[in-house]
Image (cartoon, rainbow, N blue to C red; front, side, top):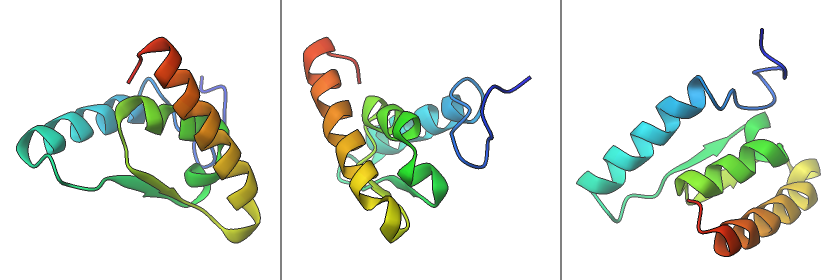
Length: 86
C-alpha cells in the first residue's frame, strides 16, 4: 500500500525508479537535455528532494506553492552537496 497520495507525492520506489532511469539514460544520450517535473509533484518537498537526487534540472508548480518549492529545492541542493547523493 502506498503511504502518500501518488497524485501529490512521487512514489519513489515505483514511478521514481522510472524517472531515475529516464534521467540517467536521457543525460547519457544528450548531456545538455533539460529535465524536470510539473504539477503537484513540483511543489511537494519530498518529490523535489528526489528530483534533486536524480539530477532533474527544474520543477514547476502552482504560484501558491512557489515559496515552499524554493525552500525545498535549496534544502535538497544542500543535502545532495553534503552527502554526495545524486
